[in-house]
Length: 268
Ligand code: BT5
Image 1 (spheres, protein in one colour):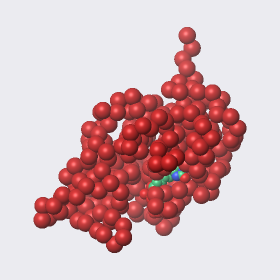
Image 2 (tube, protein in one colour; image 1 turned 30 degrees about the horizontal axis):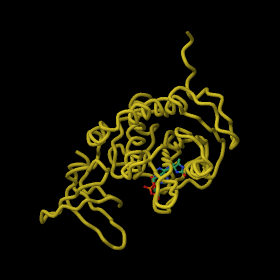
Image 3 (cartoon, rainbow, N blue to C red; image 1 turned 180 degrees about the horizontal axis):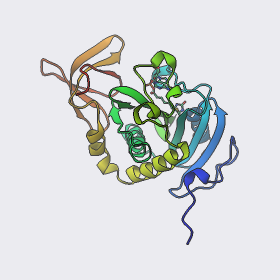
């Protein structure tokens, strides 16, 4: 029997927002775009229109890539992996955080396998190499009357060195910079979707896998909670929900569900 085609070769509606493409192994339906505003925006609209679990969008370029909290994601055309996945069903409230964790972990697995890059997970949703940001993950949801109908998780990962916006040189990095060359984007996408399939099938193993790859656990951190609230202390645990537990110097433990973290001591 012939082996299944790689996911990246799937007949895939290039640049299309027509019907969802036929599924490939793993059940992924991959929409491909040369250019789009945001793959997350596209999949949230598809989600509201009833698109199925495991619909995927990949773009060479985004003109309005989204970060968290209204921030933007920027990358030159063709320099990055820009991918979003739509996940259903989402009955339990912890699912959004877990979906984001599964995506971050799957991307880290794929980077190790295909690019020879050892990326760590910086809470809540970054992939870093020696504290420089290699990739960012953004989870958004389709909420109807307080009920989560679908989660869309997007990841932007810098492959070529020119993916890094010039103003972020020094705080961000790319595969080409850390490994000497940029991996093939479609090979990385295939490995990412295969790894995501694996993590989604084993949700009970997810929290420990995230802890094992965490760049944040054990570190001294400053957490910006928004509204001028900042705490400082040691990151002592990751709750199964994905929340970060920070122990301040006076021993108080705070469980942080949403926030931005600064790692205060350099990596060993
Ligand atoms: C993130 O937000 O890191 C989530 C980024 C998710 C992007 C993907 S691309 C595919 C999908 N479709 C979308 O529209 N979005 C997702 P946050 O933690 O808020 O970080 C945003 C910040 O990262 C920006 O304010 C910049 O400082 C920085 N940044 C922007 N572009 C970057 C890049 N190429 N490399 C490293 N850092 C970058």
